[in-house]
Length: 115
Length: 112
Image (cartoon, each protein chain N blue to C red):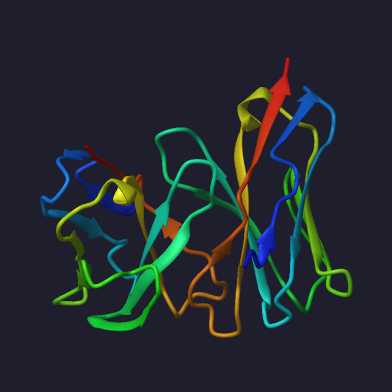
């Protein structure tokens, strides 16, 4: 399977704890995106990388959130001091800028529940 | 501000008939539009897209129509099948193809 993978698929944590999610994009894709989806809404953009460079961050990405893509391959998203409002599905997507279209390919997501 | 709107939260269609899902946008800088399909507990799956230089794109049972003057696009599925039952998201991107801006989604139910 050469699609986007995310780990873990589910995470339950207590308020105030730190959590880290991992995303492995499609291997030849140089752009990697993080989105967050809450119930009844579409995915909302958080941040994106081109290779290892983080090129844009949404205002939704508070200072408790940090993302990295150290070698331009996999990426991690860390949330520090989690709050109940952080409960959501965190989605990762990737695409190649060499492609003709703007399609992004999504992973299965990580469902975060903050108790 | 909702730049991409899907005003119908749900749609129910009989198997074999046409499903029409609608989407409106407000940002005139959007130049690429996409439709994604999502099943529960899975990530969105890309279905079909259209560039702003076109007004129609077809792929099998799926056709997307773009009306730039009205800032409106629609997805037609014909014939509809029970396996098409899912949440459909409309998304848009700007000139440099960076972030996608999504609508809230429409739940499609195809009854057999």
